Amino acid sequence: MPDYTLFEAQVSTLTPLHIGSGVELLNQYDYAIYRGQTWRIDHNRLLEAQKIDDPRQLAIISQRPPVELLEASDYRADSPFFRYVLKGVPRASGEGAVLREQIKDVYDRPYLPGSSLKGALRTALAANLWKQHGLQLEVNRLGRNPKFAAQELERSLLGKNPNHDLLRALQVSDSLPLTAGEALMVVNARVINRGGKLASPIEMEAIRPDVTFELTIKVDTALFSAWAKSAGLKFTAESALLGLPALVNKRSLEQARREKAWFERIPNAGRLTSFYDQILKSQLQPNQMLVCLGWGTGWESKTFGTQMFASPQVREALLRQFRMARGRRNAGDPFPLSRRVAAAFQKTANGRTDESPALPLGWVLVQFKAVKGNQSLWR
Image 1 (cartoon, rainbow, N blue to C red):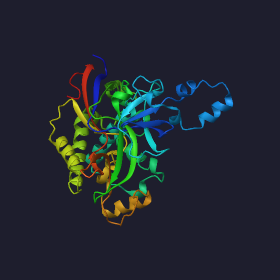
Image 2: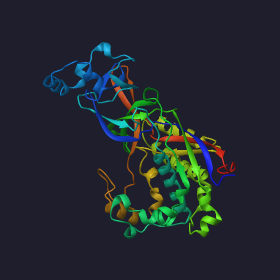
Image 3: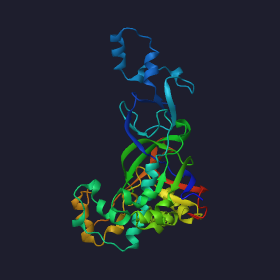
């Protein structure tokens, strides 16, 4: 039997998932809006089709919005002038309106980075260890840089350096790529506050619900063997990694419970509370994990969450030191005050378009099957 276990995994999106490339696409320059769809423009082919030999004329044309070079007859499925076509359109339709790009490979095929899934699993594991050990946060022991403030806390839970990091034994591959037109949609995200007000519109490409990625997960149990320990590789919380799915699901269900309670106080958020109700009623199998990852999933999913706040004083000190609270907030107010959600639009009887919160972001179901090694691991 090999000294590792290899799993084939399927990651299925339950709600829209956005993992950004860092690129902002501009309306009429990078994409066009036409008949309820969003068309990603292929600049090179569009310019080549102009058949202009004079460099000066080409320079003039290249400064114009590419959408001006398109005809109505160009908007078709087999058009060479578009890289892909998405369902839905951004809320903002003016020239230069921003659409955040989803990460893709060089062939415009969206995929799920293994680092994104592993990062979510790492956070869930560390948060559970923090709770199990009954640790309390001491603000004066945190680093000054917000990006690395909790580095020492993380090392105390998972290992003192990369060689001794528990997650060295967990390897998550990038997924196989998908087709952009079939997997992606345009999502209009909003910040929603405790009064139910929608603010700060953000338009983005995102993976649609009910899309499945395929990837592999490897647990290198050789690092826990007697020879590894004799070589000085001693990992903390080995048993926690070997029982990872149960820990991940416990944290995810706790988060779903908190989110449901938060949205139950929000007017017109019935679709969100229904989603969380379904999550809480789901009968998860031993080979399944509920995970929240990607953009817009909130502070609770990216950190150890409010369990770090041993007291109101610690909470306020932490918020002040790292300037975490945005907008108007009084000392003692709950934190965080808002959520990010995918919004839906609906035409009313009088022709007005109403916008309402529809779904949370970034919830996925991971299902895995051991194909090599210990068949009883994660069962």
